[in-house]
Amino acid sequence: MRFTISTSIVLILIFITSSCKHDPLTSTGGVTPTDTTTTNTDTGTVSITGWKCSADSVYFQYDVLPILVSSCAPSGCHNAATKADGYQLTDYASAIKKGVSAGKATSSKVYTEIANGSMPPRSLGITMTQAQKDIIAKWINQGAKNLSCNPSFGICDTTNVKYSTFVASVIQNKCQGCHNSTLPLLTNYTQIKASVQSGKFAGSINHLAGYSAMPQGSAKLPTCELNKINAWIKAGALNN
Image (tube, rainbow, N blue to C red; front, side, top):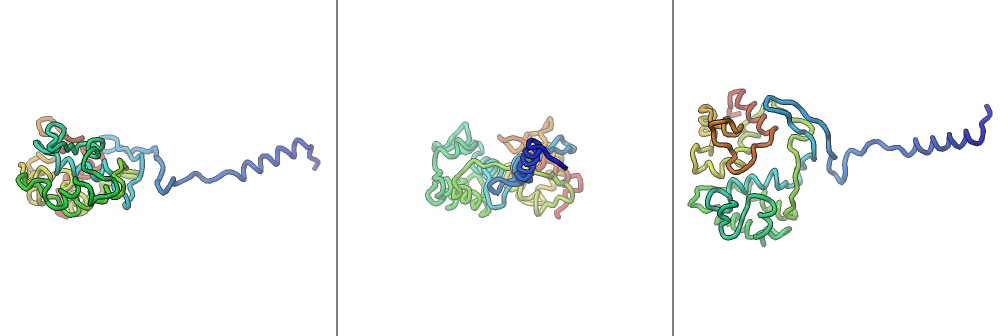
């Protein structure tokens, strides 16, 4: 078969172009890129887009802020209204203004006051766990960055939700700061189950009419978290 010069050039260009094609990137700097998928649930559409959470990183919006709001910013303390001692711990911009030395937890007053037990004040009856203190320290040591991720990325699995591995930690980080001295108490399974049975727990976290919206002074729980807790309640709120 005879080829003209122009035909040969076209074939060469096609070969070069096809040889330069690559499979779509699945990661950028170790972080999974944005996914554009959503999933429908009983309480609405859950976004499973954004960035996948890494077990090696601490995310301010998801890991740190709920602890600060729950344990450090109740009424009369480090909230937007009071700003006790000039500290406001209700959002990222305010939290890093004072008492946080990026990369140096032991030089950051926000952490050292928490670590030595001075904060939250014992008079409030709020006690931070060692795990919560470690999260604050790790966040600061990692640069006190405003990182965010989507814990629902790729999937929102509401099957077989367990109290021990999911529900308890959400309540500890986002509810117990207030509800270890404020009624209803939510410091153990028995108290949590009683609140569930009364209807107050579901009414509050789902921001239903006639109930106090919780977490107090914060946005509603992420939709996937909410759906998982609702699924646990629907399954009998077991101590599993």
